[in-house]
Image 1 (cartoon, one colour):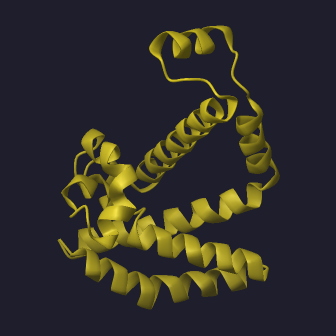
Image 2: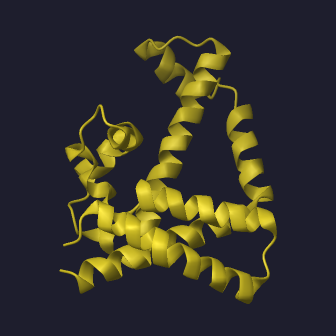
Length: 173
């Protein structure tokens, strides 16, 4: 099984240049699309890769530990080399987890923005009667709807990076 540094080196030396060549010749992308693809692949290589399922074992005070911190609950749910190492399913589970995390942050932001206290009765009543401000969530969904090409580019970069990760794991295992 290759170590994390091996994955990073191969993704930087082989996957990124090959991905950019494929992107350039197959799709004639804009500069913005190239930048989004590159940054997404780099993020996938360093943080959002199939090995996110070992986030709980990373030293918390290291840079990687800080980047992995929001994904510790993800690593409690999925065992290493399990579903997170399945090509499309693993990527989808991590994207759904990231979306859920973003959704929860938006909900907390709504409560903080509306001045609602976090007392249990108040929180339950607010959720029951829908007294919270939906503006932040609507803004998030409107942004996602208008920027579909960004989501497609990011998702493509994640799947491409996962492909390299999984193939490397299977070839060097």
